[in-house]
Image (tube, rainbow, N blue to C red):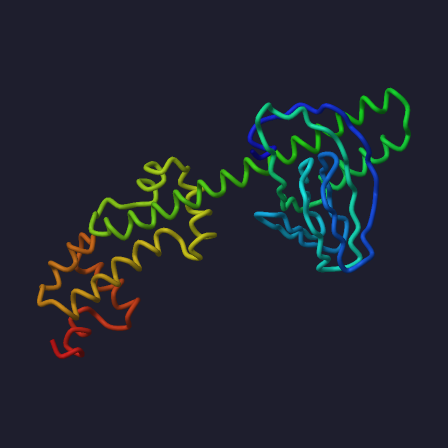
Length: 260
């Protein structure tokens, strides 16, 4: 179970400290408590029995109580802030160590504020420390939710691209139709499509249609007006224009040059 799947209550804050690992390699047999760590500088690889992860400056990671792992430094100096604590574990559940790529200074500031409160050491500040811990924990939950959303959106966009390749002949195919079908606003659909495919959805649709038109011109005897319709174009004149812009010649000229 991941700590971000649902909120797990804090049982006890044990320690908050700033540290560093000066040696190239350090091994630890087993953790005595849960821990959440932010990397201030350097980088390291954490090897567990069944998985591993690498962390670098700005990353945050969780180490589960009783986890056994080895540490290999990948960049020095490796400096960090560590918060040791105990979760009130769900009965029968095993928590999984994991890393979070956070970026920015907001999370680092949360760790520094918690460290400062812990070092002051009076009772009221201990209560504030718990609030500081939950601020960090909430940030990890938000980060995980954003990663899941990003993955879901990528899957939707891949599905939309597949839909384009299968339905390019539909003259009604448009960004608005695709965005509605996959539950994304048209503006966000365009923006995220460009990030994933490095071209706009309108250009992607045109590229699929023109590629298919070229194939039909070269390998069939279908007349141009029939190819135009099969590729989703309602006007032969418009089809001729966009085809020439893409391939440097009109459809019939391409066919003649190919000897067909």
